[in-house]
Image: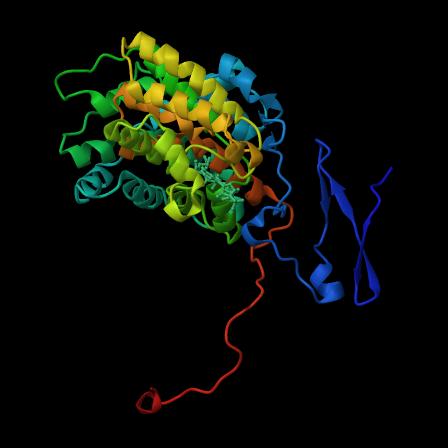
Length: 433
Ligand code: ACO
């Protein structure tokens, strides 16, 4: 039975608005004809109530703490899949056969190296450059080395997507490691064919030209899990940015490079760096966490409990649960104890029992514990958001593909409620006060 429409009453006139129902039962009032029929637009600052698209990639139920990629629960994928298999699932919509997975992996491996010109360009950034700035710039530059993969001609770019996706998934990791090495003033090392995706990343980050660093398989596995958990998260700030840029017809390289910029902010992907800095500051100051919690509740302090709260989750972020369990494992494997983990657990316990956080449904998000694992692996905090970007690449590609394949190509162009000056006359400079 078709869903009953919504009736909107404006100036004593009634307007019928269809109601759309998603495959998981979410309902949306379809306002696509609203402006034409009523002369009104909707107002939704921050888009909290706006469905900007139909998407078949990821499903989230924030109230229940559910996250699924292409219908598979994040818990099951975290336990049974790998980042690369999950990347395939996100981009192509189905789990790969053994032959499809082998071909996908081979394509990624074949693309592990970056061009010498790009490597030289990377070494030219100042050592003060944040690796997210370097990553965004070099991902866009990467497209210049593949003019045939990113032409801004939609049908052509879509036909080349298999190769463009492999180039980006593979090289984002190499570029990230090179950005780190350039900053540290270290010479580059080259990818090794025998290593898997994360093993190669750790090698590219930490090996020396004449001395390969030892790659602990459990550490590579933990990193793989972190990437898998970050691989997509439906219409968040960076993915919406990728979709927005893509909607104008821009190629995949340009679109994901914009996604990196959007991810960088501390309210989004930059939170993982901010969490570890917060924990270090609490540790340095000798606070047991209670002073920080008090400051986070005080609006005049400008302080937030980083890694807590989420626009969509009003429950425990399912990714945070998985990462928290992994924290213990990694520290054990590496024979480390990190006082920051104790502080994080104390903060979590205090916040979850505090009326301020309870009333606002603020729970740990994916960033709360991920930094502790990354720090244990030896990844510097400035690289944390870069790791997030490597993980999110398959998600961005899937959303770019969804936009590119849409039967009706429509540029994203929101409206506004203008609240500025009304028409006024230009005043010559000598007559201005
Ligand atoms: N610490 C203290 N108070 C908080 C926090 C926090 N971490 N998060 C939200 N609040 C409070 C707000 O002050 C607000 O209080 P009020 O109702 O009294 O004004 C209320 O909770 C709602 O917060 P909003 O900012 O309106 O919620 P929104 O959905 O816009 O923001 C966000 C979500 C940005 C994630 C926010 O919770 C936050 O800033 N968290 C810390 C940063 C962080 O961890 N970001 C990573 C998110 S996950 C990701 O992007 C991968």
